Length: 484
Image (cartoon, rainbow, N blue to C red; front, top):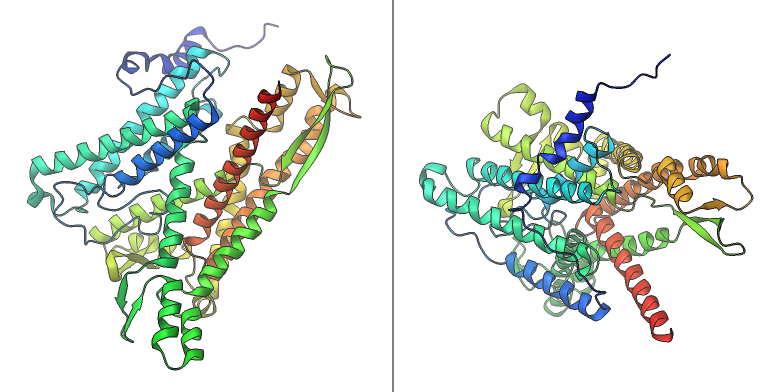
């Protein structure tokens, strides 16, 4: 019998998708890879320059907006998406992260065929990812303007509306280029990780030392937890009550929130060291052996990033629908929103409410079902996203076993054919359990009231730890090159 195979025209259709990107490759922004080895100091310099450009863009307001006082649909996700409302960084890293996820899922599920060993295919795939990111940027900019976030469209006029969209588009191009500048080897890490960590750390420092004064009804208080504590100790006659209020005051950052943040930082760093080292040997080099580490956080912070993207899109569409159809039953089922002070809008019922974290221990006691639902949602989604990601990102047992074959490696004490069985014993468990651990740490941080949300803390710690490992690796390689 002849083996079954697809007709030739089917294969051509699958292969032609990336070829459709060729005509637009010449107009897509691109950073050329360095032709020489970039020294560590130079990479540090470009990383700092990239960070400064991002921070400046976070402070430049959008020209032409009429109002930014309406409810913010991304209030909960601003810190994690590295965005700043009413500025050039309004969209933050949302378009580039979304385009990356979409293209990885399409490639991993074999909907589009990409040969990563083919240089042309890699270039076309990166071009398709950029094009997708730019299209998402335009789509999100249109949605923001048409939804009335910057004022009524009729009041803005066609000129101002177009100008706002162009500003957001060019800001998206800047983010894309800065991220590519670092990932191509001119800097350290990636722009996405750098911007997320910077935004979260900036938020934590601001909540701790902010000199902004707020009238709470009990008198004027400082927003920063540490400054507020010293101010209360100086101005209040009852020092015990002042300390108690500094630790447990409501609706503003307090010392307990700050201590919870430090506690979560330490716990996450501790868990980063959990791993299994599997001894390996090389067929071509007898006597030479090493280890293959499988970390507990096998997929790093990817599960929490995907979960954040899912929830942020749910919040966005739920709030837009609630604004237009507040009495519709299905819209109420998706989420009912209520505006609060300082332009914040929070879910008070529906699915959006139950997937949002409880803001205090009192809220957990008042509505325990909300806390249990949120816990189950985080654990399940993080585990599922982690398992899915190893399949679509090329880090599954089958993919790692192929890398072992290509590099002529095998595990000590096992036959060559048993490599995939050994990997299947560890990788899926590390992915699922590690994803659940990340989800559990996120819930603990949220329940304790850590500053910047549990998701933000997890992202910041994992990214900072990655940079620490990167620094150690670079220093080690420079030391080796110096002695050689």
